[in-house]
Structure formats: C-alpha cells, structure tokens
Length: 292
Image 1 (cartoon, rainbow, N blue to C red):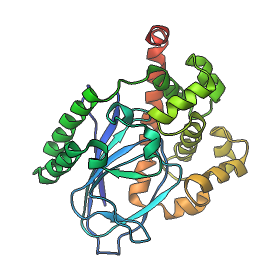
Image 2 (tube, rainbow, N blue to C red; image 1 turned 30 degrees about the horizontal axis):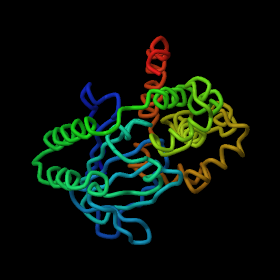
Image 3 (cartoon, rainbow, N blue to C red; image 1 turned 90 degrees about the vertical axis):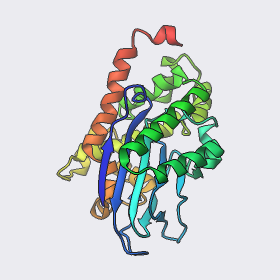
C-alpha cells in the first residue's frame, strides 16, 4: 500500500495533524492484516473504494469517525484500497463534534451518527470528487463549518493535553490538575467530555507511543534502555503496556507490523507530535493565566 500525507491549512493546523490517503490493491479476503494501536488521536475515515474488515468478518462503514482507542484493532483490505483520513490532534476532535467524546471511545460511529445528514452529504461529496485536492478541499470546508457549530475549545483541557505531549506522558494527574487550576475530579470529568480518555490513560498512551520514537527508524532495540528513556519503571512495565495497547509483546508486534501501522508509529510522525506539544506549551506560558 502507498501512504501519503498532506498538512492542513494554517487556520485548521491547531486542531488537525494531517489529511492522509492510502491506496493499493488486494485480492478480496486476502489483504495483509494491519494492527493499529492507540495513539491519542481521533480519526475521520472515508473508504473511497473497498472498505477494510476485521478478522471476524465485520466490515467497516464506508465513512466513520473512530474515537480514542484503549486497545488495538486489526483490519485488512477486502479489495481495492483508496482511503482518506483526517487525523485530529489529541484533545481537538471536540472542536468539530458536538457530543461527549467518551461516547466514542473504542468504537466507530458513522458520519451520519455524528453529523446527521451533513455527515452523509460529506461522505457522498468525497466519494464523488474527481481527485485528491478537491476531496481535501471539500473536507476542509466541512470541518470549518462544523467547528463554527461545535463548542469552543476548553483552554484548561488543551493546556493539560499539551503538557502530556510535551512530557511524553511522564507527568502526574495531580500536576496537571494544579497547573490547570482544577481539582483532579474536575479535570477527569472535562477530559472524558473533550478528549474521551482520562488524563492518566492519555498519559499512558502517549508514553507508549514514545517507545516507537525511542526505538528509531532503524528498529534497533535495547528494551531496558528504551524503558528507562521513556519513563517506565523497568522493562516488565513497558511490556505490560505493550500487551495492553498492542495486544502482544514488543518484539512480536514489531516483527509483524504492517506498512500502515508502521507509518502511524514512525519516528518522524511522533517527533512532530511531541514537538507540537513543546512548542504550544512554550507559547502559552504567558497567556495561560488570562485564558483560563
């Protein structure tokens, strides 16, 4: 499969990491399985050709939003692949979706479930668009409209998410609560609505993703070193998180990682994600008190 990304325009860059497209060919029922692991991001996905399916035979919807994940999903092509995705930055999908994000955790909802007739119209427009630039332009127009209708971003949640990214998950919920001028319970309640995960669970997911960054593009591993670098107590602690989020031990996961999964966990992609947290945290230091 071929994978490509396009960066969003400046007015959407604060909420959207990228638009992505996957294309390829596969014999029906014989596509290579892809194990997709949690990364703290919500995605809007439209299959423009044949959809993917789970190992149990359940076929994905043509157009859907997949919420925050706490466990891996395994999918495989059922035929020709032409899939468009929109990857929202951690904690930013609520700027477009007018429902508590906890209702989408570990599930996929069709575009019509999320946005009613407007969602169905978007899916049809994307499927009928003649080329990739016009599909992305249509998605951008739709997202701008939805952003104007959805609740404004919660600055306390946004600040806490940036701290989690900046620290690669190695920050306590108590520190986040103090820094956002909320109680732990208040912060957790806001996270359930605006992120879909608790602050502690998002920290775990981000720390888990930092493992792929620490491994590097050459795939060399020294698990004791990686565990220490990523803030785990020890190698066994890292392996437990891998079993929770990837469904198998690190070595087994890396040996069977598919092309799409590898793109989603590439060091370059994760560098941009963590650096975004660092840059946004630095730029918000002086404005944080007044924005709350």
